[in-house]
Every structure is written in C-alpha cells, then in structure tokens.
Amino acid sequence: MASEAASNSSLPLGKYLASTDKKTRDKAIKNLAAFLSDPSRDALPKAEMTKLWKGIFYCFWMSDKPLVQQALATEIAEILLTITDLSISLDFLRGFWETTVREWNNIDRLRIDKYYMLVRRFSNASFRLLMRAEWDEATCKEYKSILTDRGGPLCPEDIRVPTSLAYHLADIYLEELDKALGNPPTPSPPPAPLTTLLEPFITLAARTPTNTTYQRMQSALLDPLYTALSTSHDSDEPRSSKRPRLSTPTYSNIASNACSTQPKSEGALSSAALKKALLKRMFETASEPETRDANRRKLYALWKEHMEDDEDSVSEARGVDGS
Image 1 (cartoon, rainbow, N blue to C red):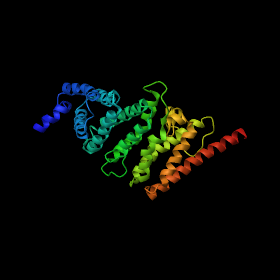
Image 2 (cartoon, rainbow, N blue to C red):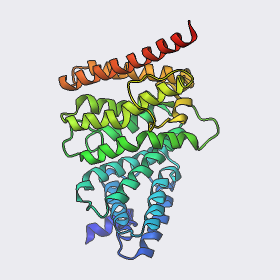
Image 3 (tube, one colour):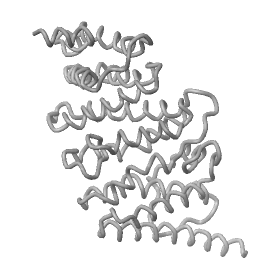
Image 4 (cartoon, one colour):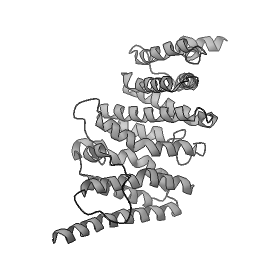
C-alpha cells in the first residue's frame, strides 16, 4: 500500500483512469493533458509512463457505445498535440505503442474494432505532431525508433509483435498521412519526408521471416503508393494495361506535398521524383546484408516491375504524340 501511495502522489491519475465509474474516467482524461503539460513538472520516468498508459488503456477498454468510443479515442490521441513539450509528447507516443503491442493479444473480438480505431487516431495525430515540428530530422528519427525498436509495432526482430497490429498499421498509414497533409496544423507546412516515413515498412518487408507479412506490406502499402504516384504524374497519358487501377487510392495530398528525406532543402518533389526516390530506397534496403534472401528477390522484382511500368507509360505516351 505504501508503494502505491507513493506512486499515486507522483501520478495521481492512474487509479481514476481505470475506475469503473464513467464520470470518474472522463474527468481523469480531461485532467491528463494538463498534468502532462505542466511546465513545472519533469518528464515522467519510463516506469511511471508505463503505469499511466496501463490506466489509459483500460479506461478505453471500458468505454462502450460507438459514439462514446470515437470521442474518447480522439480525445486521447489529441493529447499528443496538447502537450507543450515535444519530448514529452514523444514519450507519450512511445508509451502508447509499447502498451498497445504488449496488451494487443488480450483484446477480445468484441473490443478489437475500437482499438483499431485508436491506432488510426494516434497515427493521424502523430503525423500532425511531426508536421507541427516541421518534420524536424531528429524528431522523425525518434518517431521511427518508436515504431521499430523492440516493443514497437514494426520491429522485424521482435516475435512478440502481433502481426495483425502491423498489418492494420500498414492498411491505414498512407490514408492517415494523406488526411493529415490535407489538414495541416499550421499554414504552408514543409513537405513530408516520405522516404523517411516509409522506411520502417520497407525494412520490415526486407527482414520479416514471414511471407504473409511481406505480402501485406507490399499489397497494402507499397503497391498502392507506387501506383498512385504513377497515375498522378501520367494522368494525361495512356495507362499501362498491366494492372487494373479503378479502386486504387490517389493520395493526392501526399503526391503534391512530399519530399524524400530533406523538407527544407528539397522542397515538394514531383510525384515522379517521389516514386524514383522511394524505389531507390527500397532497392538499397533490398541490397543490405540484413535483408532475407527470399525477401530480397521479391523486393528486386517489385522494383523492376514498377520501373518497367513507368517506362511503358513513357513509351505509350511517345507513341501517341509521335515524339
């Protein structure tokens, strides 16, 4: 009891977040951002952040009714942007992902959809946080480490990471980035460093020992993006007949406001240049010694396919205009 009292003196919200009373939980969530944003308070030690997130996780666990769940998911994710200290925001984000990975397999099928929604909300808020920081290189590096370190959802070496969580993140990542770029927190933000943001998925595709994980990274993220970038720069040209593209998302905000790795020096790149930069990074990753041989062959084949697809589009266009 004494240790619990000591913990509660430094982190008074934990027991209220996990309360069975909804009004108590609602009040705790509303006080949480103020607690974390208090400039007179030091950053929470990792153990305290872990305790805090256990309370938040089960606060969300006990929420019911779709509208209540949606509002609470948004409110919790928005804390990332309410916190005034960027390093504390990133600590909070790391706490979210480590807790989600750790607790994921305990979520029953009746609750899983609301946690999928929470992951979506946090992905969107994370992009807006990075945008507000003007895609600062050190901040983006920390964000990548949050996703790829042990305990992160895209760590290729951590067998404890639930595959369904990595799959869901691949499914919604580009959509949420596109949404965030379409609703920037500041006027005229620098372009998003697309290669930097996608490196965790490319690395996972290269190093995963599981074929289904590789296939999901390709089908949910890499193929749709490459195709979208192709169609955005050749929309006036005849399309290759290789693949149907009727249902492919366009990711128009990504295509118009992204660079490869350096927002300030590169500026917004054309979609053709973006695609080339991404394919180059994928090829480089495929060539790394840590890449599994079977995955290397698939990545090389994917690189070749999309390079040839662009060449075919150019050839068709030349055939039409006679040049």
